Length: 162
Image (cartoon, rainbow, N blue to C red; front, side, top):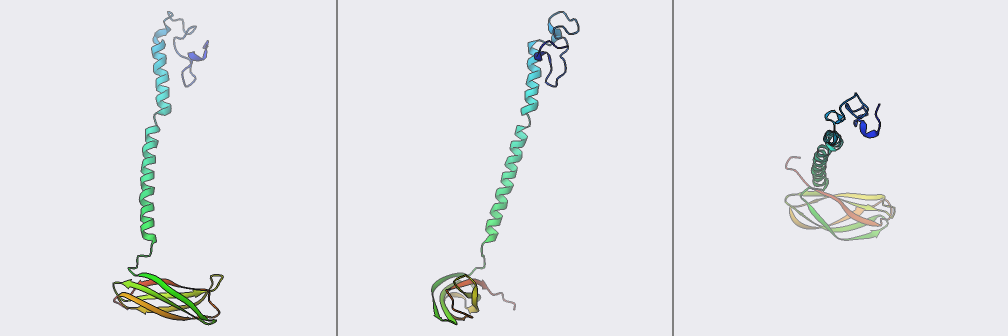
């Protein structure tokens, strides 16, 4: 039976040759301070030895996340090749609005312009075809009730096949 907690190994078993153990000659049967240091050193190695593995796995996970986030950001945007900018818009009457906008594209494009009410509900929409290059376009939109805002919803280049 062990006389003190230091007579136990890290897994709770009794050390061989400990004082009062199996009748050794008093030198602890070769399990003196150096052997005890080795046993506690291996316990520390067992306890802390997996940290580099988790660190490397964490770095790999962070790299995968970063690459995935970059691809998501690149594919999220509107890559249609048509730049547009609203120049002016106005509400003409309860059933009509107008917008003037500029486009810049490499080929013919189609833009969707829409009018919305104060609650942001769409009250009118129109499809506008524009030519290649830089174009200033003015479009009138018929609305079902008075609009509060007019905007270019989207612009896309047209393919060669229809």
